[in-house]
Image (cartoon, rainbow, N blue to C red; front, side):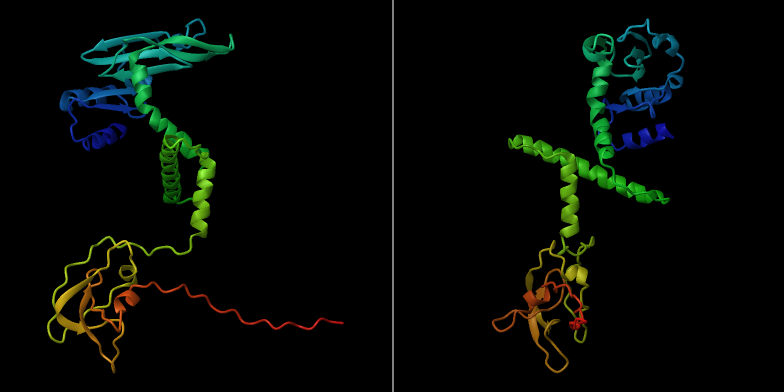
Amino acid sequence: MSSKLVLVLAKTIQVLKNSTIYADNYFTSIQLVEFLRDKYQCRYVGTARPNRIGNPPLMSKKEMEKKSTPRGTLDYVSCNGVFAMCWKDNKQVTVLSSDAGVEPLSTAKRWNKDTRKKVEIQCPAVIKEYNGKMGGIDKSDMLTHLYKTPMKSRRWYIRLYGYIIDLCTSNAWVLYKRDAIALLEKPMPLKDFQLKISTFARTYKNRPTRMLRNTPEPFVLLRKGQRTSRPSDNLRYDYSKFHCPEFVNQRMTCKFCSTKDDIHRSRWICNVCKVALCLNDSRNCFQDFHAAPLPHRPLRPHRTQRPLHQ
């Protein structure tokens, strides 16, 4: 199942040939690396679980995690363009790669409990490349779980909705922090950023109406006796669309000010709502028709003051 997900997402890449895919140990397997290399000529770098690398002659996990084995120890083997490696960090790290290898060797700083200071250990090139490409995903997971939206429910999609909100908020904070640093300003912490968003969402009353996904069809002149339909309020008060008057040769009944006894006709229509509206010196029905009504609040009954008991 995990390999199928990688293949489905890999097909969305425009130029898959000579591209490199990075993934963690949940998706990586020797069969996936060879399949991407042989069929799509695509490179792959990822951590792997020891039972998915095809039993190469590497140091066992028991030997690698011995105290006598120093940190930075590595063991690797390469066959048919696929590179497998075991490297000791805090624990054993197993890597499969068809792109990068061991060289050039570099160093990485790690905390040593015995000396109480940071020491340098050798680090292969494939680890440097993997950490550089996968760091954004790990950071996103960390930011998402710092201040998680409390949504406990037996319905799984409710939790998914909360995760999407947290993910969008953390991504917005990363962009805000980048822009604040570029403007030489001190960015606010993530917690304050989320509180400002929640405060604005709770206090924002004049919410715009829901946008319609379907764009209106072009206007067609009506036949004699045919009437236009009144647009819905979602389209009528949708200010994301540019409501502009459009002149037509046919005079039609105004949808705003006309009544059964008093009919007004106009040659101006709204290019979005597709209804005729008066637009002259005496009447401006175009503006009145698109003005959103004020929210109605029911009047509270007047409370009479009761006399105090003596």
